[in-house]
Image 1: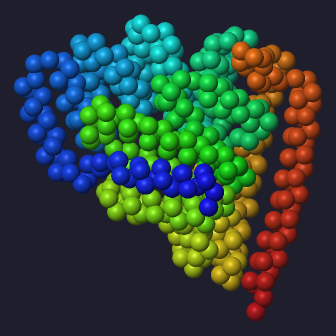
Image 2 (image 1 turned 60 degrees about the vertical axis):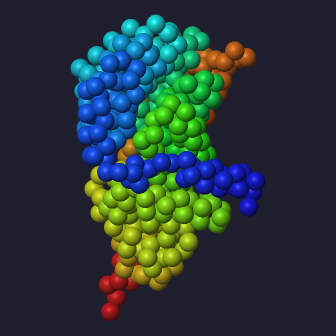
Image 3 (image 1 turned 180 degrees about the vertical axis):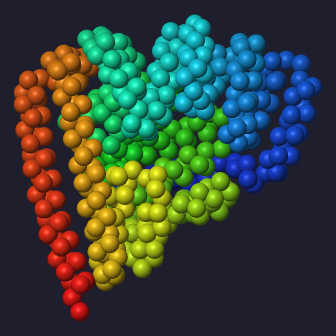
Length: 445
């Protein structure tokens, strides 16, 4: 096992030792009632703030939304700006679809005296709003707003890192997180370079990007090594936050669900994991399943973690029904369905399940065509943007340019589009021929 793998294993064990899951303590509702009673007797804003954080950490999402407002106003009386910004970001997560609340949160952010903290929080809020709205690919109003903002509302030659991050995130979302064109990859890599320059206090922005990047690189033709790297970064931040909250006596703060999501995504990139890493991550997921009711409910309902582990360990007889169950979810993207059908093709072939193999191949062709259509939309959007930002120093660090789109890259971009389109056409023909042959075999007596 590599040194890094051994270190990662120790980190995981340390996380489990630190984690004080609320599920192992007295019933949450009983604790909420206890601290609600105590809150009525507090006489100082600081004491109220401490108890409100207990209630926030113990509550479900609806309860947290309620307590977040209480914490914000109480933190104001306690002159705790960090707590106020923390709750503004949480509220941005809860109300990302509500423009009126988002505008209110932006006004609240503008009242913060610390200019850098204000800029970081504003960037996070807007990014979160765009991220949530971008899940509806037919939102033409959002697309128009993004294009206008990208071309008119940012200083392409400036040195404001938060403005650059905001611009890059808007380009990424405008092109669509299902995109994989040249400009999309340029912006994703540029964002990755800039994000490392942020101070540790900007972990919300880092988490936001690492999550997006891990999802993008987890696609079928993505970069699984990078996806795993970003999820490991997320877990490292969780470890740091847990230690910070222990010092702040937030004894009910729980990150089990966050850790589970990262571990599950890492398992989905099993082809880039060593055998030791696969077992370490599986043990971590199983521990979360056994101790946390929310994680258990998610795993039992969705089954992704189980399906990925069966594929990782080549247990194809169990992988086939597990993946088939995943594909019943109509809310999945075309990229997810393409990847899962690819897994199913592999499992069915190894298990000599001819029927499942042919059906998975049929579905794989369907979603490959859908993705091809998405690529065409992305190409058109890239061309629209390219003329607006071409030959401008999009990003600068103090020591010079990080990303500079030139005329040479312009030509490479066009060449790449032609190559990708040709390759997709050839691949589609191969799939169709194979599909016809398989159908003919099925119809033979």
